[in-house]
Amino acid sequence: MRFYSISHRDVLKLPLTSFWMLDRNISRIRADEEQRHARLLLVTQSGDQETINGYFRELEAEIDKPIRQEARMEKGAIDRLKAHLGVIE
Image (tube, rainbow, N blue to C red; front, side, top):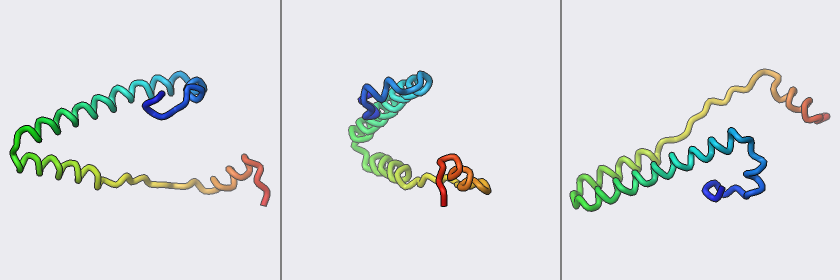
């Protein structure tokens, strides 16, 4: 899967459900990119400076969105992991 930089051998190791999920996402991502390119062309061809500035403000706002993920650890999770891996302290 050239799109994800995955070797042919690694692709063959993927479960079928994962392969088809990745395949569907390629189409989604490409469609999103094409939509952005078309919008960029329309904005730049309009020649309206306010439209162009608005477009770049939207892009900057999207870039600034941090990804937040709450991490909650279960009590004893580290000990169970160590036991599973056979780590002796």
